[in-house]
Image (cartoon, rainbow, N blue to C red; front, side, top):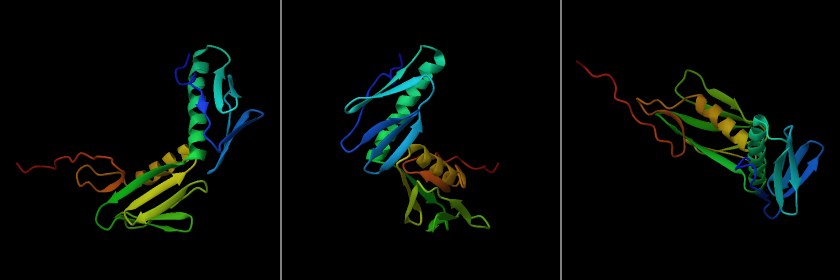
Length: 178
């Protein structure tokens, strides 16, 4: 049996779970998330716990068992506490600013880079070189952060670009004269 899938998910205070047809709905103080339950997997809601069970012992069912349990656990954490990622920009003249529902990045290109921010995600530009991405949906936070980082990946020679907070980039030696 899946080691992750067999662990029950404890619902914190203020978080409610319900099943609607083939969907699970999690509501909490930060918002509401819903997700379709994968075929071959059943979700059972007891008083303050959620149990994820599989119907058979096929390989795909075992994989979906752990996946569904992890997704539901992320939903519970998201509506209760939320998720956030911090991005840092390094480089002379590199900066970020938020205008409406777009993030405008000045990254040394001949043009500004504009990124559309989804409605479920909030981007806060604390300093021109520091952005915080917040949401209740873990997948959306990671995807938006990856899209922003992909506009100017960190350069290992000059150490310029967009990095996650705490990410270490090892500096490579440049060309040496003979």
